[in-house]
Image 1 (cartoon, rainbow, N blue to C red):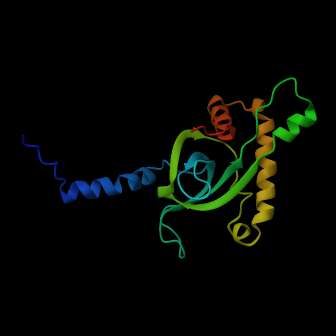
Image 2: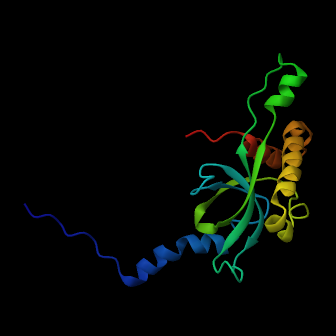
Image 3: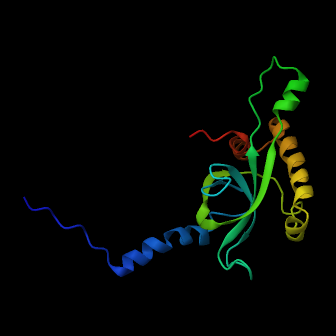
Length: 168
């Protein structure tokens, strides 16, 4: 019995496989407003929205990365029979804000039209993150409560997906 030898990969093909993820980024898949999944770290398995991208890196982070704002604790299920106080309590969102390498993000087909760029300023993120998170919490909770008001069907689907918990 002779087993076939494993296929050999030429150095050119290895280079193509290695840069495949980077080409996705360069094609503009990860851009502002896109819903992404965080793949590693403390917030692995959480959903986030890309606030700002840094394709060429910065002075301190010399790799492509993005500033993301995500949902650490998603709102819980709400039914018609619940009181307003209970609905308000179950609709609370715990946000997070983080700089993440592109290799640790997986873009989804959804995007949301939350304009977080104006609210999240680069200097504030590093110096006063707690106040930025409080503002994010208000924006996320207000958007969650007013999902019915969205006109664009595509954005409404992205919004519903963003606030639903990822089951795996």
